[in-house]
Image 1: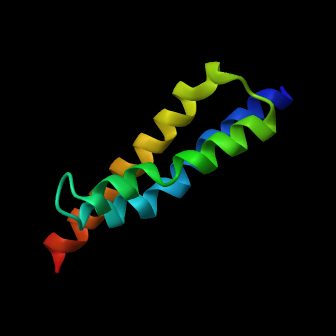
Image 2 (image 1 turned 135 degrees about the vertical axis):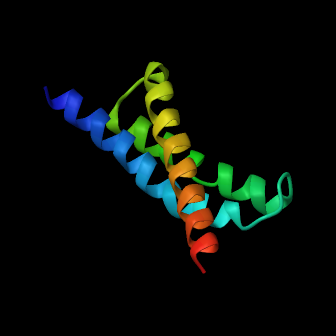
Image 3 (image 1 turned 180 degrees about the horizontal axis):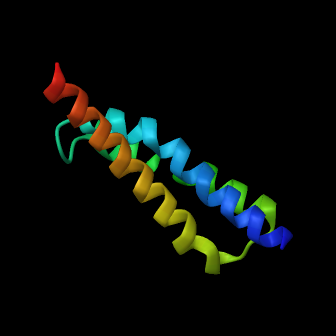
Amino acid sequence: MHAFFMISGLTLTALLINIPLGYLRQGCEKFTFGWYFYIHISIPLIIYLRVKAGFSWKFIPLTLGGAVAGQLIGGFIHRRRQNNG
């Protein structure tokens, strides 16, 4: 049960870290340095947290899913704010 809460927390952390990064990414032109930077900058931190928590590489899809969801949510918020003025 403890491991479930740890991996849930790690996935939620990946999501929350990537919301502001997705917001910033949406303001960059696609495939520029800034765009790639905002997508990839959270990966070393997420890997560090996963390793420190003692989870193997088999949990990468969960943390990656959280990171992608955070990027998408952040981009959605940015587009919504731009359209509403």
